[in-house]
Picture 1 (cartoon, helix red, strand yellow):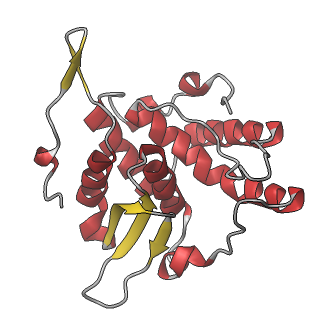
Picture 2 (picture 1 turned 120 degrees about the vertical axis):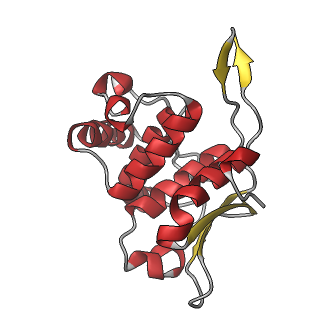
Length: 202
């Protein structure tokens, strides 16, 4: 599908300044260029539901599937992959049980607990890509939006990442995104608490 970052469409221009649009195909190129060789992992869209599929053999690759061509879904699924450790990355969907839409309040509280780090990384990735981040409760059927406590936990975790840094995979993806979208000189300048001074908007 994509073999090189040069296949990405040319810069658009806004007020005479080069800028990028937001196309999930670009994320696939950037991810594969960064991780396909060292981690045997690729990013692909077009799925009805997001899914992580580990490689089935030595000649296969691990695949992160995101929903359709949704830009935010791609960033979110990469965030989950960056959080998952080596053992988790050998299991389908990282070995987690997923309660579908329509969760009870107790199930929703557990969902929010495990989603703090992935959605915090997603916010960092969104900032690096010049994309607006919105926290997700992923529970439309129950009409439960993100709780104030969940949104605050995301803010606090993002600030912790700004102070302490992120792991090597997340840092590599942030570097690729910020270089491609022109949002920061480097990852250190991207991870500035001032960029994330406000509350997240649900």
